[in-house]
Length: 360
Image (cartoon, rainbow, N blue to C red; front, side):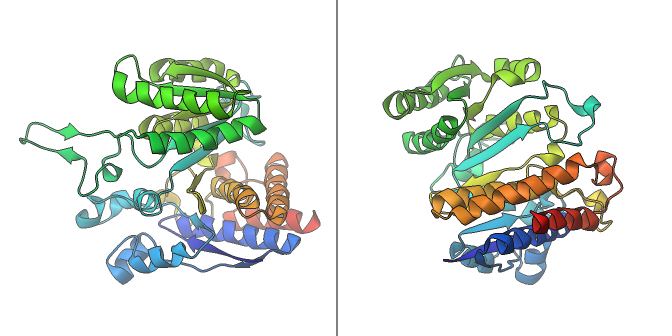
């Protein structure tokens, strides 16, 4: 089988860490004999400069034929006003490709300074965030934007929750729970926003009772969940929640385990996967060859794991395992970038990971 995995380098540190991830992926693919094409598509300032669009049509058309792609960070806050006021590149990708499931794990990684870890070191969770609706106004209308200003002193914002979107995310989260501790936690706010979050919670429970009776289900209000996550993160395993809450909880979990900058993630529909780290574009260190590519590299490993199942090709799983071990072994050896108290550059850190892949 031949596959196509796209590359969108992005802004600021994006090209540095995405190219580092590209080098790792090519080494991993070569190690197990995967035949992959690696087309590059413009995104961010490159798209604006060449096509007057941060996610130009040439990129959308190209990615439609890809099995998956790596999406570097973007600096949309710095875009010219006419682009900043639109959906950012991440939101555009999730909407255009209906990437309804955002999966973000959080656990303590080797090499993280103990004083930065705020939870039990054994904590290991996965947050499933509904990606296609909820409170984000760029995804909730057939046409237009789901925010309105009746007067200059009033704003109305519409949230959306459908059975279809909730059920399909629930299946993804339950399948993950079945491979782990068979424990799923629903995070909501049904005590106050009763119809929206009550519906969201009840649909997930219905899916669990019908298709995954072995999985233990509990649920927390969002305010209680954040408190328990800080104090007892080790008691959670798989968390499922809405778009806005999932964004907040996954960032919190990443920081509690040592650094949001290490947080990986994937966004998926039924047939494609986008690897995207949780962190931003860090323009203050762009071009210095000191950016830490670990979050995006681990995202790429998740992407390969997803492809192993979705494309029924165990070579992806083998490559993912080899690459992840190489990353973690390099971190455990202290051969890391300055943000982790190391002396490696982005390039030399990547070199060491690739050397371990070749030796595997």
